[in-house]
Length: 201
View 1 (cartoon, rainbow, N blue to C red):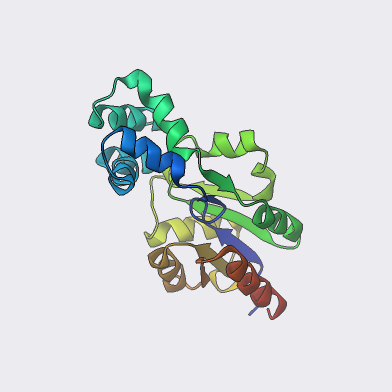
View 2: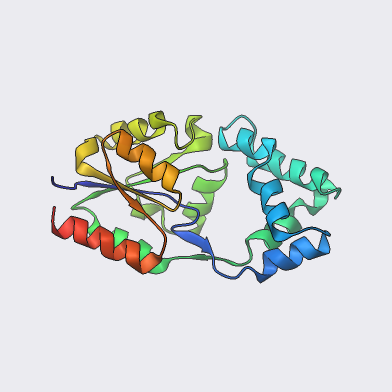
């Protein structure tokens, strides 16, 4: 087996909440736990609809504000507080960038409509040959169709591809369609596992 294509998740992998205090403090101001706030943001019906591209990201955040009994004008403040502790993993981004053009690099993310523009603004869109974003394609992991679409977009073979994600269910779904999988539980451990896979390919 020779790995020619690397597919990777975004949230929880390339960007992670390293400092939880801003999110925790925002939840406290709202009279709720951090976990309750995260459920409103990530597990609500509006989040699901936004992730499938059925509503724009802005509409989701208006729904979040409404569910928190805040005026819609507060949505930007919620976003700023909620993501203030997030950090991009520049080590991973630099490593992926170094693999091109010898490998194809793709993103598969369950994300809202603003992700592509955000990645472009942050200056690392060049890392990826293709970005498969759920809101743009109307499919979400672990639906096998999103992995098959990514392979098609990259003109890649499943048995020559590896997928990296922090959610095991998503890794297992990639394995079902024939890819190798790496469960991202620690940045360095996952990086070492990928390096080993590529070196032994």
